[in-house]
Image (tube, rainbow, N blue to C red; front, top):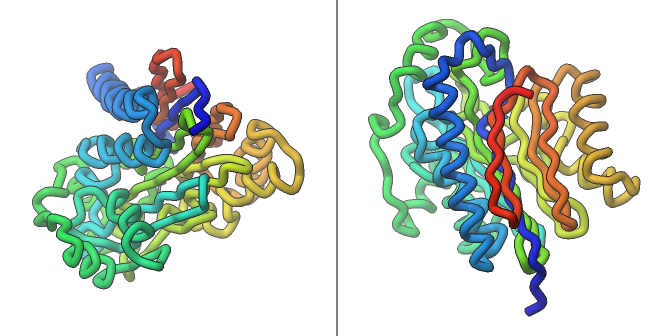
Amino acid sequence: MKTRNTFGIAIHGGAGTISKSELSAEKEQEYHAALEEALSIGHSILAQGGTAIDAVEMAINSLENCPLFNAGKGAVFCADGRFELDASIMNGKDLSAGAVAGVKGIANPISLARKVFEKTQHVLLAGKGAMDFAKSIGVNMEEDAYFHTEHRYKQWQDLVGTDTVALDHGSKKSKNLGTVGAVAYDKMGDIAAGTSTGGMTNKAFSRVGDTPIIGSGTYANNKTCAISCTGHGEFFLRAVVAYDISCLMEYGGLSLEQACEKVVNEKLVEFGGEGGLIAVDNLGNICLPYNSDGMYRGWAKEDGVIYTKIHE
Ligand code: ASP
């Protein structure tokens, strides 16, 4: 198999209004440490010749297992006081993709999303059917207590009983941030992307955002790029953000950086869609654009230097 020496990974832990005053130095350090850990897991898989899709899945598992982020453990509360999780993953090598929406009791929805394309003929499974599928392949179910975190409970208490749903990204909602994602390119020249979220605090009616929708929240194609989005899902859905970037590259001849700039800082801004994304192309370029006040993010390339950032 032809290999090359370049590889890299980028991750996010949510984009939005992250006010510096609300983030204590200690908390900030915790975020940096959690991002670093996820990056080093993904990086070591790639360094050993592992695949981009493995690096994406394992880096996201690490973020899902961390209570700081709105994915897996640490997910936001729905209107009924429970947790509904969404995730999707895509392999740029062959365009295989899997996704789950509105699943309950699943600690690592990104891994279940991967199983959807590995073990079924489908791309997206939702709700009870997705959980029946999880049980059928032996995935362990967690009780709600596993997902319960005090800071998410307090956020929900501010909204419970109202019709208001809080995006991770509204102003004064800095504590709500946390959808997670990863994109990677490997030594074989393949790229992959994945995204996992608890969605919006106090969401009802099985609301689903962009995260589990291939082409909106996640997309990967070896011909162009791998993208994982975070932001106001309704806008990202309507703007078909991830595929739009790929199309601008494939049909418009734009570079990764030009396409990201156009979609995140022009189209989404005009449209009113707050958020950001992480992107890699098949040449190993990495872009992490956002139009919000900040985005938990980080990246590492073959030199092994790990960068993590929250604000500029
Ligand atoms: N895009 C996610 C959603 O709308 C939220 C997020 O990125 O934080 O469900």
